[in-house]
Image (cartoon, rainbow, N blue to C red; front, side, top):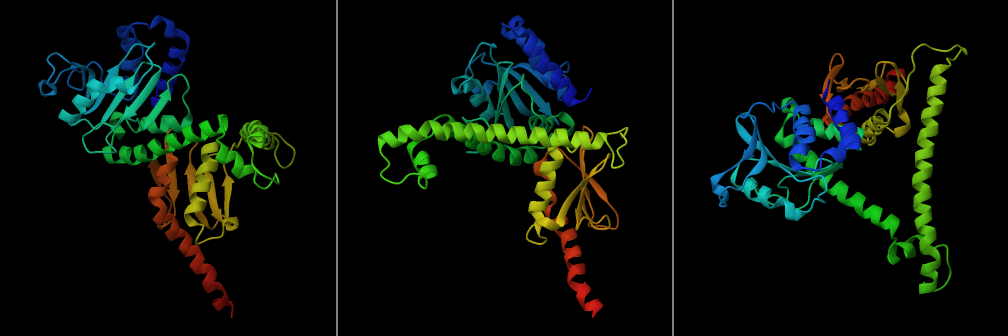
Length: 358
């Protein structure tokens, strides 16, 4: 099984057997160690996954952190476990704070088996941040989350790459939380902003009470309609793929995934100052999702090879297509200059065409 399949097994386990994991030891055995194993760490090798790790420099005799993970001979990840009934908070970071500052660890994980909090030192070097850059519920694994977790796998572990994602994730999650708060409890300034053109007169307390529930309901309807729209689109695409252009059912479906849609939008955004968005077209195939200029097969801009567990981005700035491995959609931006180089070639051809014709 791959990383994703192993993590989903753990997700099912926490859903169905959490009542049998009330002790910290049971939790470590059933969830935490298999979680580390899913990321390809050898939990049976005490030189790689060190249980009950103790560092004398911490200053508190006998104080230990549950696990320390060594990568290339250096301690890089610390893991502290709490009982599944514990609501994780910054008070539970005490030991991780001290160990983080006296080791070469770059990441710290605080978990109760269901909730996982990933911390690093984005605010100040060698000082663990109070706020995690990544939090998730193991029982609710999402596609993008799995891509982030794969970056911590032993074979793909890269400190700089993870830190780049950590910076984005930290602020994105904070923004999402604030948006959620606004949706559930719209502040007066926001209600005033979205209703300024709808109501003539003073914005009194009575007006606020009248419009606040409407703003809250409107937020929810926008979310619901967006979800329904995506579902309808997916169903329509499935129906079209099942019935060919000649009305005959096809054996294999061509289904455009959400990752492919988002990847296409990222590529189009990267080249939009060179090529008008209307010129950049997505054409999905059974094995890959093509991104073309002018809907012309002879003008490939990129290919998204997303139909398997490992994702690749196809680039065309050389003599032939080069496929590069990516772990998340964000990594497409790492190849922005190469995508823009390809776009410039098509732009140059388009500009030169009139002079040739004349």
